[in-house]
Length: 283
Image (cartoon, rainbow, N blue to C red; front, side, top):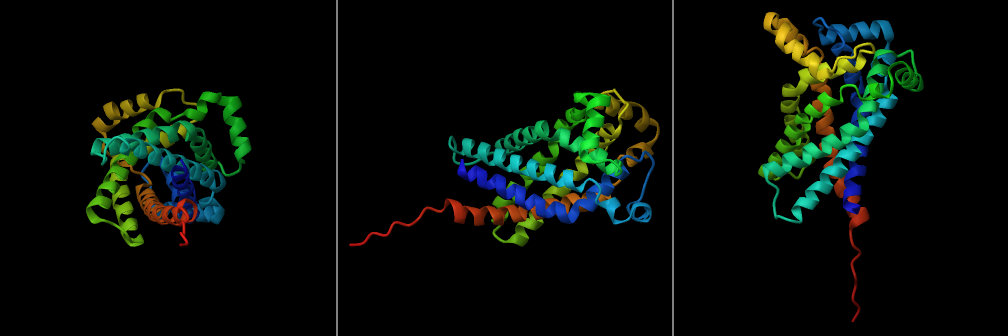
């Protein structure tokens, strides 16, 4: 249990450091995804700076850093716990085991953190309101269920960490990684591949969470787009990649920083907290 806690603490610390540096990319990505027409990252960045200043790109920072730290702490704790349980029964983890541990850990995080993600998305959209005001606005105007908008598609998005961590563990075994640079590179590659495949789903989830008046399910909206818009207008599909550059930079660097720091912080904490004292026998 102590080792699992170390991984959880390490996940929270490493994600906090990464989020502090990369939050502006996440803020811009959320705003760009809310746009239904095609938008370019540089143009949108100039627009936000002109209209809102530095505060505009750091909107929602307080709630985001809390939700991210909690998410990664829960994920790494669950991930390590499940891997330990499996390794007690067999010497090595198969690809199926890797997929299973990533999926279950991701679902646990989603259930507990979807309300935080919903609030944070609203904060980034409307910088004039506080976290408390957004919370009560959702609660009284839309009901408790609104906090979980987008959760069904978030479960589908577990394919992202499944791809990421399965590929990351594969690279660790193949490359026998030991250095910070190696961990950084592997984390970046694994996350980029996962993001390319899942970004359109992330865009749909963000739009759904930002829509206060829409009662249609997220899966229904996605099917409508696939059946109607994409059949007649390829641009509709391209627009689902609005903010991809911002997201790719943010999420790839974020993952690379988190995974590399997590490996090193975990080792340091393990050496400090879990290392058994040597018993000196005096003859």
